Length: 115
Image (cartoon, rainbow, N blue to C red):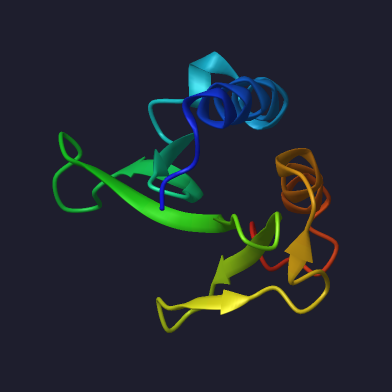
């Protein structure tokens, strides 16, 4: 089940604040940038870079994902491993609020999200 329109707007506001702090400077964004998407009950943060063979094409590399579990009122936190599969973030597999998820990603204490 998708999250409510109210929750989507709240997530978008928090994600925009996160990007404002974490995005690289404007002059570097053609080479590397950050983005996000909200799909059903999940929020995903990803890096955007030019494709190494064709600089006109952009590729996305997933960084972090949080999925809302409405019945428990929690967000499950995931990170993308080298095997290109989502894995539960063992430091904090669940958080109460989207802000908590974004704090975990920003701090990245185990270098799981940004390496």
